[in-house]
Image 1 (cartoon, helix red, strand yellow):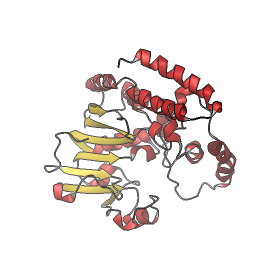
Image 2 (cartoon, one colour):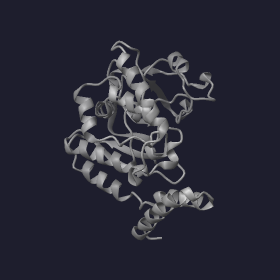
Image 3 (tube, one colour):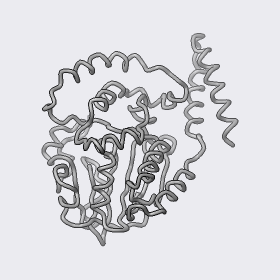
Image 4 (cartoon, one colour):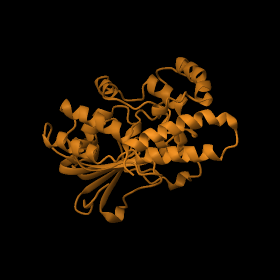
Length: 307
């Protein structure tokens, strides 16, 4: 994510390090930031198999005041791995990070690709929702985000990451959760404790669409220095952003260049081939119909993509 950027000659901020920090204090002046103190993060840790004691100490709690004020000086580097999807106000988050960076500072992001995670059944987030959350000054996930996050999360979903294109219906486990989650939200008081959720879900394409929309309205003061789409077998894509002034014309150009780096749908081809192979190995005649449909889908994609 950082490329040639060094953290030895500047203040470096890592957001949401939890039990797997990317930066070590031995590398320079590293400040670890999170939404709650260390003891709260350890008590609320929801990572099976991870010892809460492995959660690294939090230096600064961010939430009630702007990050720049909480830190006390401008940073040269900010890293956030698998954090952006949890932020209720995505646009406000970007603007606060920009204000906390010195000119030319680097923001490195690792973002889960919803197609390869338990969010695969969800719909991609869009610019309208991002702008709406910012204008509403949202400080916690909305009822809609809580509902979708609680109902559509499915550990079996990643194998069906192309369902948006194949038109597959929602699976029974998702449908069965709708009623209970709806009733839970109905009964949930406004004063209920903060409930974490994946507020936003992205693919590399949809994320670039969102930041291009934000740039069009003058609210994305970052140049995309490098963009790394999701690789086969991985669950995330990464990018490196450079803080610039608002309205810099290079912002739009850099997003266009990032979009040009997106590869042809080789990952889609690979996953479809895996599904085809599994169906071919099956002896059940009930699978012949989806096999034919999947074969046609695969053939149409192969026509569009050079081997």
